[in-house]
Length: 163
Image (cartoon, rainbow, N blue to C red; front, side, top):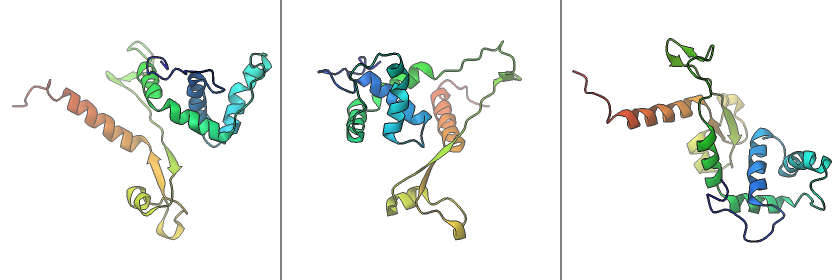
């Protein structure tokens, strides 16, 4: 996947692109943890198996630059290749009256405290209890609107006119 996106290293690096993909996935799994702690968790098992040799956890700035070099395309390709429904119609509890059941969770990220972010995202909480920074919400409602619109737009040409 990394090679298909043209992100293979030209020289031997402390942070090869494949490791950076795993690192970014680790950041999603351990979102409250700092960069260096996520990397330590990621390589702890390899170190225990003696597979790291003289390799050491790089500086935070190196991890940041490695993420920039990687870009988003390899992760988009990975998502497109793996994010598919796993249940079939014969899977117990996966369908109700012929419709696939799904659950979507959400999360919030703090964003920079700027006027533009304030206008775009607002501040969560009641007026008297506003938090210190704006918050970007990623959850079921924005996702559902996007998915429903995308499915509707893709299927629109195939739909028969209602009479």
